[in-house]
Length: 192
Image (cartoon, rainbow, N blue to C red; front, side):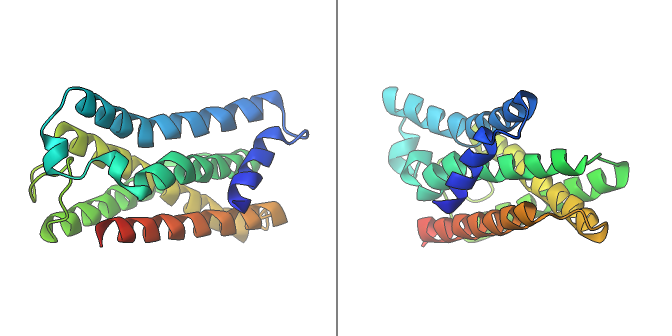
């Protein structure tokens, strides 16, 4: 809960401008809607319409990694990363953007291959190598999220090289790393 408190403090910090608070709040809301809102909302529609796929396969709302990871951790992670970008005055160059995009979508592809080869089915991939529209959406979102994280770590490296990594940003890095690890544990628990 320390990470959640720190993220809330980032929003309510009196030293932050209204513009900064708006950017951080928007980052959290957009992340929540894109990560959890689409799949969780689709799950609710499927419950309401008695869609048979959610009876045959585990839906979003049955995963702790969706509730906690997508619904809470990712919005906080993205908010902390956006705060760092703004503090560092990060600009996306072509090379860094390409590396982050290739790394992010490459990592997403690894996850999809592992999911398919291990027959880790759910209602986004009801059979190995066969995705629903929500599965394709999740791939796009997942690749984008990994790319955003990749760009953060590239920017972090440059900030560290230039001596621009402040004590609060170091704490944010530890919080981000801890939340990523927690998300990984939740995923492992959901699929074990």
